[in-house]
Length: 327
Ligand code: HPA
Ligand code: ZN
Image (tube, rainbow, N blue to C red):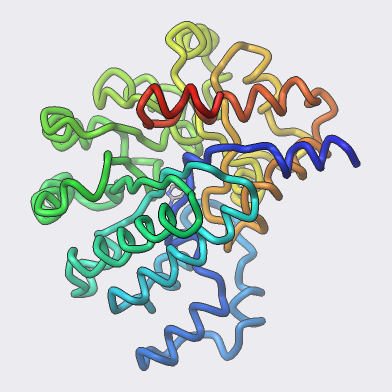
């Protein structure tokens, strides 16, 4: 089909991908074996069969368990390298990659191991794949703000290896205001700021991510449609939303892809983008997200395909000259 072919071939940026969410079951098993870690699943198939999620928390429990097999700098490199090669195959020309250091430092893995392994893959991606990539450090919102502040301090020796910070993990009961101080500190440091908001949490969390955290981009943000004034503000201020359609269905944010609100977000003039979130867990990488969403939503056509690609570059944190070369 012609539209599907355009979607696959067009150059695009990915702005919402958790690198730990790109860990495929095969690599989880290989790393577990190499590192002498016992997995609670007898086989790759059994692990994959456990990927039947009911909500965000239920997914996160399995996702953090999977990330527990990562031990050495090489492990982090391998994970990121596999993702970058896969992104290249989807004609991704730029990607901004989230990583969750607290998942690893809490297990005794040094910050240096995490950042250096990921960054080496980013550099090699630039050199060998011609793929532009940056890292964004995410704070886990189910942990305390003190923990986030301590994590920031641990990461500062590697300040040149990541461009910004984000906020992820369980949203309900962990509002943006809980992290106002650490985001304030990051802002002083000149880091770019993003936050997950309005995935499971209410539209108010999107407002608070903007007003209290000064987030420049909202990850997910699909619940903004519950608040018409917020929708108008997002459109007027061109605040981008990094929408993840397959993730939203797997985590029951929408009952099925045909009921996703991406078409309405675009019609409202919001700078929405399509992203994969945790591709190894949610059934697809970036092009799978594009083709499945366009197949499910009749209001999306060639015009929206172009708009989504363009939005992904507009919303990215690259230098203006680089962006203009892509748009
Ligand atoms: N939401 C919150 N935290 C996450 C997600 C998500 O979709 N994926 C990985 N961590
Ligand atoms: Zn996410």
